[in-house]
Image (tube, rainbow, N blue to C red; front, side):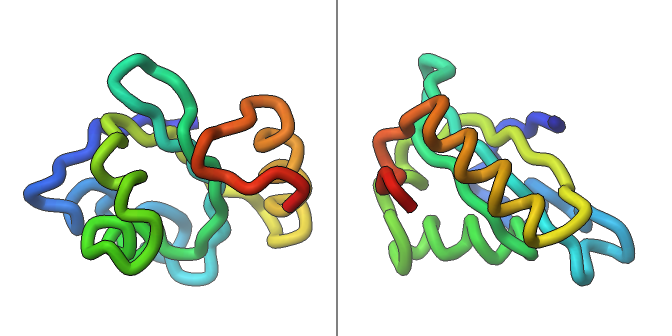
Length: 102
């Protein structure tokens, strides 16, 4: 996994063009961590910048945006594998901003 420190002033620059083909048709697993290094949210997306802009603007879980200091992410080969890994990691870490039994 790659780790980035979240630049809350320049969110669109945080992830750049992550993934093959500049991120087009990629699948990403991400883990948001707070200032204590605790995993607070695990998710899956095709566009990391868009997902974190949702958090930033309060369209989705604004508290995740407030508490996230670093994000670990990796590109996964397929949506099927992505969802399996996401489910396993949610069960393992039990992040406070994930619903169990997803």
